[in-house]
Image (cartoon, rainbow, N blue to C red; front, side, top):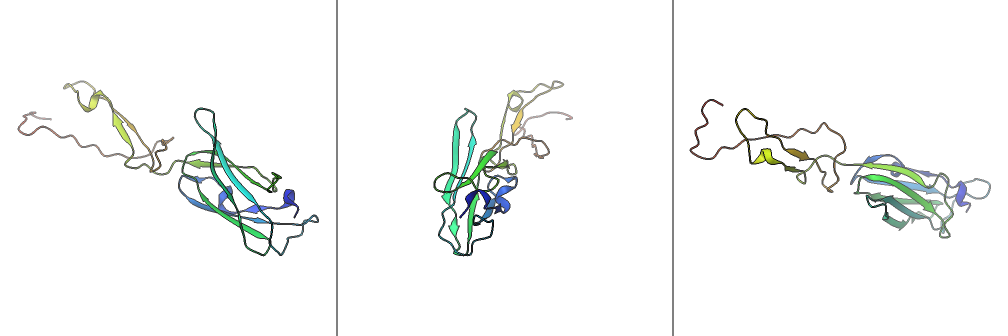
Amino acid sequence: TFYPASPVSGTALRAHSAGTAVAGTVTAVDGSGEPRTVGGDVFSVRASYTDDQGQQVTAVALNATDLGNGSYSFGLSLRTSATYQLAITSPSGIHVAGSPFTVVVSPDAASSLSTIDGLGLTTAQAGSPASFTIRARDRFNNSLTSGGTSFALAIQYPPGADYGNL
């Protein structure tokens, strides 16, 4: 198998949201670039990113599944929103065509892990602004990085309080 010419296809190579199950297929080719029709090779798949402290983090390391016909499949679900390097290599570290691939994983939708804080939650004076901050987070605790999420706000008064005409 000529690893440097072996192509990869699939959803794993495209941007997606955290927690989305994605897949890919490696097609082994020979030195002439012709697809192989038998299995027996090993393709290592490794997805890594750099965290907030500048440390390299390996999120996934696995071997693609040999389908016995010259094709090798893999699946993964990346939960941390980050820009990943998806490396697909031979056991000795020779990359396949196009590897490493850059794959952007964005936060999923806002979830119950979102938080709210600020003085406006507990202290307010009539006629003055009272502010608070909502930190939207997805189900994997990733901070959402763009707006557009709607949140509902309900104000509750203590029982028996008289607030006049609000």
